[in-house]
Image: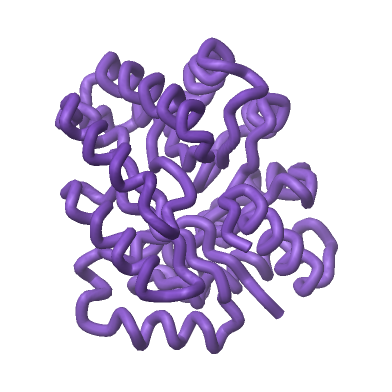
Length: 258
């Protein structure tokens, strides 16, 4: 079977001691596509993500600034991102969006830069990887205002309601589930996962955070995306292989990483 981890932070310092071994474990588990997110605090992680992608055939990079760090974005940030986005193996922008749970950046800054990322994605014809927490209705409204039908992307690590998922699907987005869907407390989220059409579904680890059961409390890594796939396949009543192939194809299609 083949699996894709559609959202992983492989440049994180937690992997500095065993990055090659971690990738080897994932490949042994069947993971053959890694979408590495450069938005990880320091802007240098964007450059590291691009370098990692260019070093490994099965690794691809997304560059951006997390909504937590929206307050740090300047005009120069976009100049640097634009240049990186044109490098080989860069397949998207992000993660961008709105996080009204932590509010690590002022909400107006988050709104401003979410709009800016959407416009840049349209200009460069790249998909978006989006992070939204406690702000799905407003995020959907911004997406509509900035060009409904012309924006491609995924709502990563989805934790919203069935109604919120339906709105995102109507906007043409993919929806991705992380290890949270395996948690005992995530009964409602599994109901949502059951409702997502197979051709609009992605899976991810968001590693090194959010390790799925039975690895909760440990460092997460791409090999564990198999546990996410198993849970969703069981929830949807599908063979694991069918779920794995579909989510791999969806990841490759969205991020043009065939």
